[in-house]
Amino acid sequence: MTDELFVRCDCGSIEHQFVLTRDTQVHEPNPLHRSVYLRVHLQTWEGFWRRLWAGLRYAFGHRSRYGHWDEVILGPEQAVQMWRLLEAYLKEQEDE
Image 1: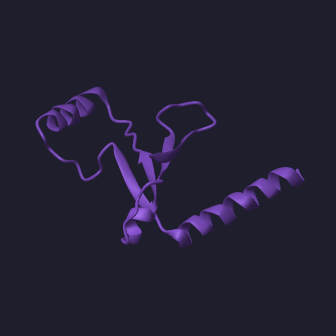
Image 2: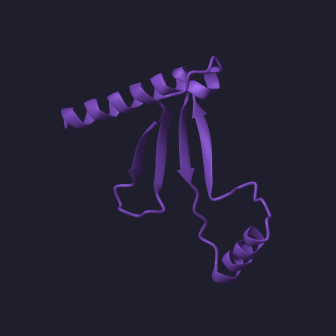
């Protein structure tokens, strides 16, 4: 079982999103398996022919170093920093 939070930009575009995921049933001693994963949707704004070429390369197994989604593993320290940043943001919103 996992906890997931899908966050889409306030502009409403589905290209502007990220997903926070935490596995709630991991019982392993490896701390990386107990981390939170932040997956980000990557969007490029290339022309039609470049996107077609990229799609063909993808269909034939080429692995782009940029990909369409990427992932960052958040450890406890980064999670606390993220929490503090969001707390400061919410406090600013309350003060206005």
